[in-house]
Image (cartoon, rainbow, N blue to C red; front, side, top):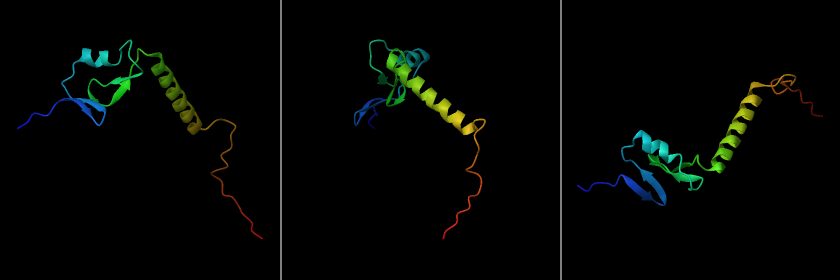
Amino acid sequence: MVDKPSSGELFGIPYNFEQPNLRRLLSGYWQPGEGMLVKKEFGIGYTLNLANWRSWVVIAVVAGLLYQQKRGSDGEEGVEDSEDEPVEVIVD
C-alpha cells in the first residue's frame, strides 16, 4: 500500500498533518520577516502571522465589529423598540 504524504499542497492550498509539538505550533504564529498570512503548522490553509503589524490591524477591526454587534443586540437605553409593536395600515 502506498503511504499518503502528511504534508504538501492540494490545488494551491497547503496542508500539514504531521504530529505537532507545542514549540512548532507556537513558532507558526510568530514568523518575523514573513507576510501577513503563513502556512498552518497543523491543519489546512493559512493563519495570521502575529509578527506582522497588519495581522494586529485585522484582529482590532474584527474585535471592534464584534463589540459593535454585541452592543447593538443588547439594546441601548433611550431607544424605543417600535419593531415589536403592531402597525396599523389603512388602505383607501
